[in-house]
Amino acid sequence: MEKSQEALVLLRQIIRVTDMQEKEISRSTGLTLPQLMVMQTLRQMSPITTGELAKEISLTQATVTSILDRLEKRCLVSRERGVEDKRKVWINLTEQGLDLMKGAPTTQQDIFSRRFDDMQQWEQSMVVAALERVAFMLDAQHLDAAPVLGIGQLDRGMN
Amino acid sequence: MEKSQEALVLLRQIIRVTDMQEKEISRSTGLTLPQLMVMQTLRQMSPITTGELAKEISLTQATVTSILDRLEKRCLVSRERGVEDKRKVWINLTEQGLDLMKGAPTTQQDIFSRRFDDMQQWEQSMVVAALERVAFMLDAQHLDAAPVLGIGQLDRGMN
DNA sequence: TTTATATATTTAGTTTTACGAAGTAAATTG
DNA sequence: CAATTTACTTCGTAAAACTAAATATATAAA
Image 1 (cartoon, rainbow over the protein chains, first blue to last red):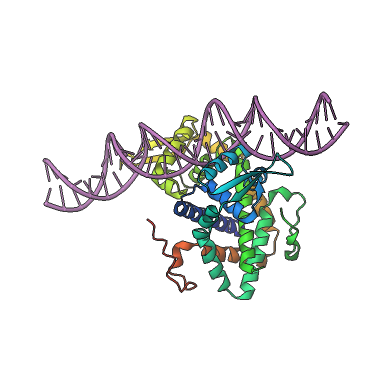
Image 2 (image 1 turned 90 degrees about the horizontal axis):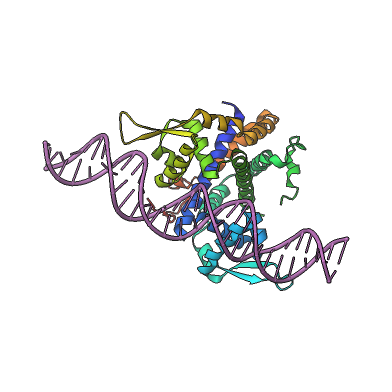
């Protein structure tokens, strides 16, 4: 088989597994998948505005608003109208919300990390380098500009 | 930063990019994302039964049934009651459905493949090897077999 | 053969997502 | 200050997602 095909198959597998893991977390927390996405994003980057949040998870503001409505009703997040700019609404995890995310979430990542740490140094570096390559190769946005880059050059700041 | 964290960040990036690419295809084909998943699966493994299809994309049968209802109404798939086992319903892409999938889809993969092919042989092998590693490390299913974990604590019983 | 149990799918009913369009209010620009 | 832009929300609608129950077929047990 083509090596590139092989890589694509593996990628699909990886995505599939993470997808299923998220569903597992979703079940265990009692959150739906989009709600989970919002909560995870909040955990990382709160406080954040509704608009930024929407951009982050690639949904429309309208959709995010309705997801937030439900999370707020369950006291997992709080909204706070901006003081400096009153158009903005800042979202935060409540204590309850933070607890929920602390409790159940990162099983997948724990397992991954533990296994990862078990590898030799050079293997770890290899994996990271390879993932950088893949991330770059997938990024269709920059496709015209793109000759394949040397590995060191890839860190140009994302977001 | 922890190397394992670095790897996880890259993974999330990869998943995010593919997610956005799928949304792009979804727009260009006029299919919703779950519909697209069904169609892509069908393209690979049709004919397939409703149940198998559901398992493949990790949704309940009920959900898949309703998705199929819509695809059938648009003449993109066909249902056929099994002859040997009349409980089964075999799903197929119609000609129209196949055309649709032929037309729009693989841009992402094309770009990926082109870039992949641009790499040196040894780099290609490295990437594939690394992806295999990652796929394994993520696969929580086999976690009991995994020597990496000493702890039986992650008992995610379920099912 | 009849009864029970398991399998495969669909139907029903409810909640949640998802989006575009329109609405409101606050900022910014000319 | 009028006009426009920005940030969210509301509304209406379609799709998705789940559980529970219904239907029909297949297999096993009695």
